[in-house]
Amino acid sequence: RAMANDLWQALENNAFNLVYQVQKSVSTGEITGYEVLLRWDREGYGPVSPAEFIPVAEECGAINAIGAWVLRTACTEAASWPEPHKIAVNVSGMQLSQIELVDLVKIVLYQSGLAPDRLELEVTETAIINDKKRALNILTQIRALGVSIAIDDFGTGYSSLATLRSFPFDKIKLDRSFMSEVEHSEQSKAIVRAILALGRSLSVPVLAEGVETIEQLDVLRLEGCNEAQGFFLGRPAAMDWEPSAALQRA
Ligand code: G
Ligand code: G
Ligand code: MN
Ligand code: NA
Image (cartoon, rainbow, N blue to C red; front, top):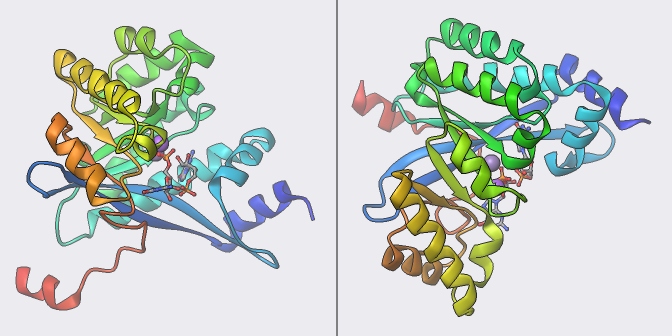
């Protein structure tokens, strides 16, 4: 069967679901938010990674419907959490080229009742580069709603510095490829240090992705990184709040 057909089918059959991965302050360990990650259990195949099916969804045009489902479901779920943590939703480059995205965000916030400052959109540099002027217009309008913007996978795109200069954004997410070597390689550490300095001089917090060991977290603490995310801090998982905890708070 063609994957594109199955993607459309999955939307109708409720075959997608969301998992959440915690993001924490490096200095205090406090939870600063959760990244929303899409999961698909493909009938007859099992779980398929978004790294595999998002490109297919972009090609066949299903990405807008899937992206809308993710945004609506994430905001609706988070609005009912016992604690008002922020959520960070990934947005594909194709969604960023459509002005309808602004209205979608507006409607979803209104219908879910989620406070705009609890929503962050993660966009990649590559997504922005496609149609700079249009993406800038869309991001500016979304930011005016009170929603924040994070640059995802920072350091892997090819015009990082130009993007930083001309785009409105609130957070840099350092790509996880830098983490895998940071304990052993002075060169990787130097690059991380430079990006952290860049964030500081732009007054933009930096979140390091892919933190898998306590040693990596120690380096980040020493270098003054603001936030971290990765298997060491928490794996992506369904968000089920402990009933007892919820009761205590009620
Ligand atoms: O969750 P996982 O590590 O398998 O994600 C792989 C890739 O898929 C990552 O680059 C991630 O940003 C992307 N991804 C995960 N969920 C979504 C989503 O809801 N929308 C988009 N556009 N990309 C997503
Ligand atoms: O591109 P993006 O940052 O959205 O990618 C998020 C993806 O990274 C998710 O699919 C998630 O499963 C994966 N991920 C999260 N934490 C870690 C980690 O510590 N190590 C590795 N290798 N992958 C991670
Ligand atoms: Mn992301
Ligand atoms: Na990333």
